[in-house]
Length: 433
Length: 105
Image (tube, rainbow over all chains, first blue to last red; front, side, top):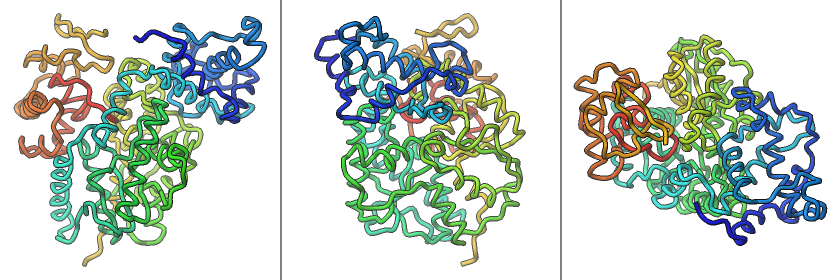
């Protein structure tokens, strides 16, 4: 690892300049140490070690703030628990802020005074990113996105070949040559995005969405240049890189003159582009951005697609991605969709805004060094699923899908994990044309 | 560096169980990792998938697209998911001795 010079430390401390960020200042100074957050945290539930208590993670960042940004902390650091930003502190920050938090925000909704704990954790990650301490395993996915235009490094021709292959399959399935997967067509109503894991390894959700678009007679296109809905720099905390990625999708929308950008089922991607993106790139979007979850609900509500719930007879439960539900407030739409698309729906406990994180969020899937913790907290989710007796777990997030699939095998749940659009496509009633 | 031990052979792996050094891979290693994942016997279809992944990795430095795997093996998509319950990445690529792919896998 690199030597810790004053220059590097200063880069980390830049994030704590209160005059730049009043919200951070408030939230660093508000914790009343009531301890209510402890039991809300999946890390603490899975391993009751005091280090994992969310308030401790806030205090870690706050202690550095006190050391460098308050008068008492500068003169009598010991009196106010102020900490030097040194090697030891940095190691602890890496371990707790990257390795023991998915930024799921459950603690935030349980906090007695409303401290935005995951925001403080994110700021801590920004400090680490500024100093060059992003875990290599996480950074490599950011690098792939920046260097190749998508986070799995898929070559453009391979992407095109895959979509042509899926298009042939679609035409066969709906028995109609006019069913297409349009590429780079300007002036459409919708520019649809994908998680690169779909074309690379799990294309059933692309086929499902194309089938839904066909049924809804939608005017849509994909871009072969910029289709990646993810933004791993949201996880790493490198705002410059987050801005580069968000800017590309913004520019592609303008280039293709689409009216609405529809984000594929991706929790952090929705958060990073729709809700945080304008802050990254420092301007408002001149177009609409919605998630595909909202679009599917809209199609059903407006009668643009017709579903027969009898086509999905197995019992289905739903996992709420933290970034979409708790952070984005999108949690009713997926329930409406499932009630229309399946005949037997059951909730987990807890669910919706109070749902437990699957354990794969916050970049955990990428950081294999924390795999053991990820599986430990995932066990809580596995037990939640088991108790529902469901055969299918629906979740509108590819990151959650991957974690849940691993939990399914590891804890022998015997379920199927599906995105919402796959379930909707299975229930579609295609009219005769 | 974590290690896994299967039938008295010890391998250095990353936290997700992907081989740290892809060059240490051979067919025996593939069999052992598969066994670790609960695939008792690698059948012809398993080998067809693993071989195409390995070949692509050696030529292009990364796992092939699922389309390539389907087209070159003649297997259907759902069959691949059934053969490797952990999926093409955490399942098949790991058995083929590749490093963990980037992205949401």
